[in-house]
Amino acid sequence: MRQRLKRIRWLRWVLILGLFLILWLIGLAIEIYSYSSVSDALSADAAIVLGAAAWDGQPSPVFEERIKHAIDLYKAGRVKEIIFTGGVGAGEQVAESIVASAYAIQHGVAKQDVFCETISKFTYENLRGAKAIIQQQHLGRVLEPIRKPSQRGRQ
Image 1: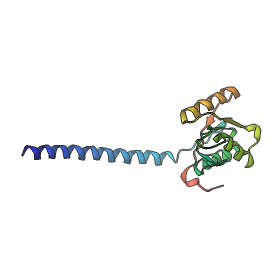
Image 2 (image 1 turned 45 degrees about the horizontal axis):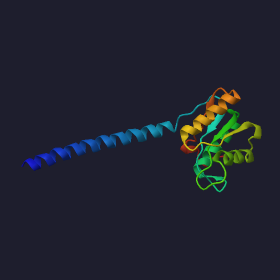
Image 3 (image 1 turned 180 degrees about the vertical axis):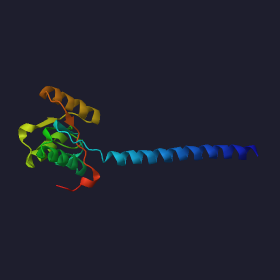
Image 4 (image 1 turned 90 degrees about the vertical axis):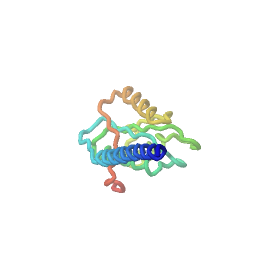
């Protein structure tokens, strides 16, 4: 009888913890979805594009979307310059930021409006490198462009 009571208590705790986990995941999903509709209508001195994978000198699909969004902001006059971050990935020869800058220049961004941070491996390092560029160039307001899911594929 005691064993059965212990099992029931243990099962009750597992169910309660499972319920809290499910509620937390639902809340997190709602927060992520609502964040996708956040927009910053103000212009800025620069946009920061955080590094992502680059394969054989080409941006990965995720990285390409980040770059395209920064290009859109630049062409719309919302940012004057773009800061690309990201070092050389495993098995690659060229830094992610260099791949991104070449892509942006090929798509209409002026070379003098592009800055690259080429040594970072992690997001914290991306941001630290971007901060150094911001300080060196005496930039004020900067954006980190995030493409909304509804904007994918638009150009």
